[in-house]
Image 1 (cartoon, rainbow, N blue to C red):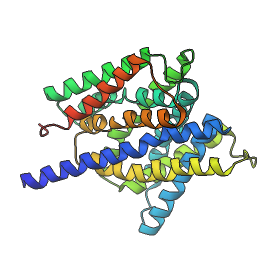
Image 2 (tube, rainbow, N blue to C red):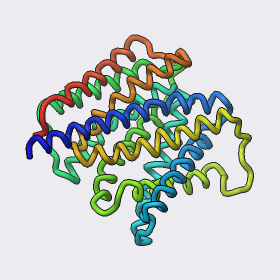
Image 3 (tube, helix red, strand yellow):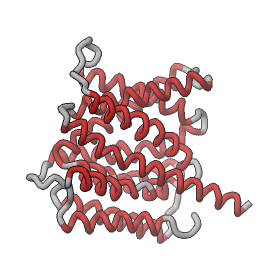
Image 4 (cartoon, helix red, strand yellow):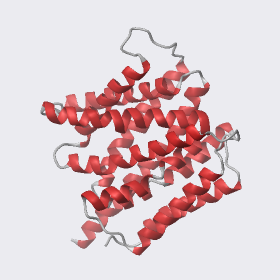
Length: 296
């Protein structure tokens, strides 16, 4: 029994690491879309639309579309916040403070996840987890103090939207776990994404027949964000958080910012000053010590 439970935790950690890998490409793909003329909100819209279509087909094929109207409305309302606001804030931060900055600022999430976990699930933290939280928080602070990863004047608006995206990101952990008691992940994410699509449609004016000119590069970048980095990543994410604690899940996913920094440095030569690199190292180290030992 203990072996089986430990296996489940191992698979949970692996699923969250795959999620982190897929999510790490979001900054790079978002930057490509922005560099090719797409504004932040339209980029977020197409990412959400592609993912919603994928989950719709998934649910249609598995008979998972039928839910009570009240539940569908609740999931969609959360999606306006957890998808629409989240994705648009993330793209805005990428534009004004850099892709690496956006990813790092999202990882204020462990603070919020800790609060949510204690309030809703009564999870307790062992000393190892408190140390990991402290290191990840210190790392995020150092990255903020670095001023950003595009070597321009610091953007307070970019920092603010990055922190908001962190709160949005954190809210997915308890919300998804609560609804997993009733529905499968594809059903949850389809209705959430549907709410995000409606919100972004209103925000960008996509309810009108006019559309921006989409080039092959834009279709590929937004399509990859929607299908690989959202549809596939959400499935791994849902699998992982069913098997490990919320705080452990949030900190394990922090392999993402280090990978994201590497991709945008490799392609766009976007990088932090020394203090930002130090912060990134602390976040990576917090992931390592979180994965040690068994859950209390």
